[in-house]
Amino acid sequence: MPLVTGIQKYCIHDGDGIRTTVFFKGCPLSCAWCHNPETQRFEQELMQDEERCSGCLRCAQICPVHAAGRHTDHARCLACGQCVDACLSDLRRIAGQMRSVDALFDVLCQDQPFYEGSGGGVTLSGGEVMCADMDEVSALTRRLYDAGISVMIDTCGYAPYAHFQRVLPYVDGFLYDIKSADPLVHARYTGKDNGLILENLERLSHDGARIILRIPLIQEVNGTPAEMKKIICFLQDKQIKASRVHLLPYHDTGMGKYRQLGRLESPRFHAPDAQQMQDFLVLFKEAGYTKIKIGG
Image (cartoon, rainbow, N blue to C red; front, side, top):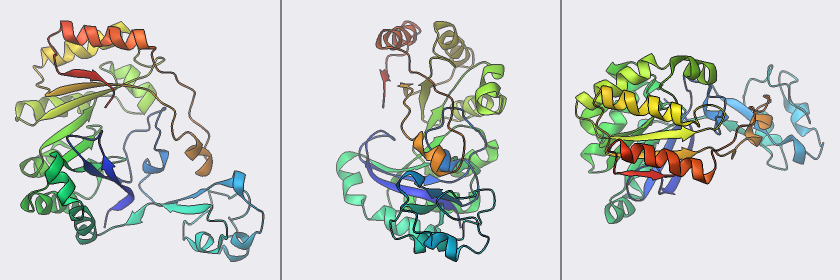
């Protein structure tokens, strides 16, 4: 069964209409600015709000490996969940829960009236859903398709193309991230170069998939006209067909999660200012992209 970190209802920025978004756990990239670090690893993890801990130490008394306490030893933690049940202040949780295809399908069907009324549906996100168990992912997309529910895939693109081919018949499109067209920049800030990502984007476009491009804008990483021009040149050279382009200014929501996971906080990044964002918008419009917006 896939590991899921959350199911968020009434989403309006993960595709068309009102949507329910499922966040799968595990991602092949390690983006330095990631605001959902609990979705990066492919195993369950303990999250603890140490700043609000009362120091009752009920967690320490029950922990089988003596990792729990006011300050948890995350390296030793088994993520067994016993300390979660023992905490009187509800300051602990396990990131990642096993959810069967049947259970996910039942939950996602609950909001079908909202999908039908708004032109919405379900978005499978992450982490990276295309790196989850594809037997289960394809089974879920097929069942949703058969039920008349629209499905979008939110992806970083770093997965075997065969995974994309398995869901292509059942999904309405892909929310596809491009962080940088420069392989060295991409590798420096995500841990992987962008060769597979750009190749998959080209293949999806040529196979007729609907693609909504999403470009996260980080001042220190890709927030320059030169970087935007590299992305535009790639899109034009490869004749990538994008139904929309969204320029997403960086935000630091979720930085506190790093502490809850026992990790060092990510470096401090910044969003381009409003004028720079408008300048990037103009660059895309001058290149012929009319369906482009900031945000979303």
